[in-house]
Length: 286
Image 1 (cartoon, rainbow, N blue to C red):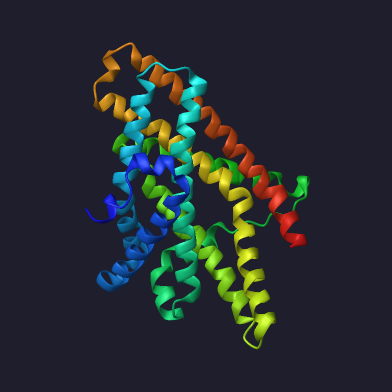
Image 2 (tube, rainbow, N blue to C red):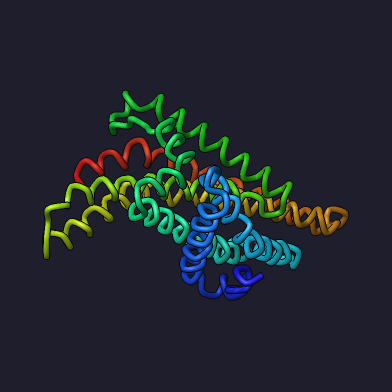
């Protein structure tokens, strides 16, 4: 009850950037509780605890968005309103990623290995080899795009079945991205062991900037697509649960959800293009 009442859904939509702190707090509590109570299964338990903390707010926001659909407002107005909720969700996700990155990078190596064991296995399994060359990377693009579509479908399915269930998939992705960035930071800081003064400060800035840039370029549209898809599935779920399916207004709900899904598909395609052909080039100059 304490965590879920820090910020209401209305407050989150009015000041979306504040949810970055909420995501950081939720993640930090989940990380240390998982390690202290469920040490052997901490890598997955912290994701479940994070999901439990974030679910009430996500659910309340989804209900608010579904109620807007029933008012019969024009679609462009609805999409503008949905952007407030999506902005809040994205800021919360960023807070989660930052927290995971910090704890992965700065906790003792033994503790970090225990907390992120599952995430490290996943990172090793999905590390891409994009080069920025169209001919060489088209097969990688296809693989990444289809994998992102699969995640997109799960976001829709989880949200439809559980209201705001996509938050579990997104919390899991936050832990993977945070661990990947944390690994870059930890590796970079190890190379700065002999640096002091301004050189050390500049090194810290460079390492952290590199870690963020490596995943932010394609990560923002990709995660944005998952949130949009999750919101679409959640809106339909709430409408069905409230028996709005028996009314003419349900057609408006379906139309709005269809528009959101089209946006999600476009963002997924755009993110895959960035990941394969833009990120490797940019990072080559970083």
